[in-house]
Image 1: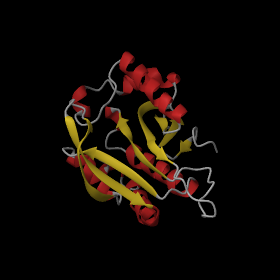
Image 2: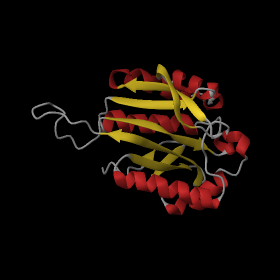
Image 3: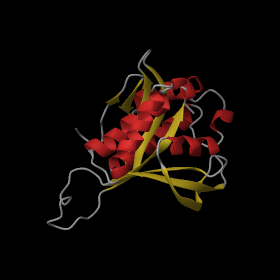
Image 4: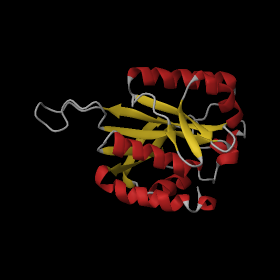
Length: 212
């Protein structure tokens, strides 16, 4: 499967390669009000959504990201977006078992947001399960990172619940959703930790009313 265009399908949601055909759906998905996205940079309105898609596709062309539209299987509605990004392939020396691999070695998962109707449903947990399964079992990655705003305690708790290990604080790491110099909490999951994370995610999917 081409790493730039996987379709990842679960029981509740499907992750499709992001494209301009998703624009109207994303405009509707992000129309629930800015307060919902206090700590996440979410495109509001058609112009912002089109720029968001254009940037994501440019990153995909550069080989550094794989962006998705999140589709609710029950009705086919676009309910948000997420992506692999900061994708890296390391320069393994000749003779090393990972030399010449066709897949990347490490990445980050982020730019994840959902419509108001999909918050606290199984959507986010299943998206993480689909993406981490692809990262560790198809791409055979060594590490997947996740970052969140240092003020976003809900996101931090959600990452920790699935087995993300806190690595530290990146100070003035990036522009925050409020256009401040955001401090980020950095988490990671290593290949050896994936079986435990997969178990945690699977258990969370059995309790969709507790999603956060």
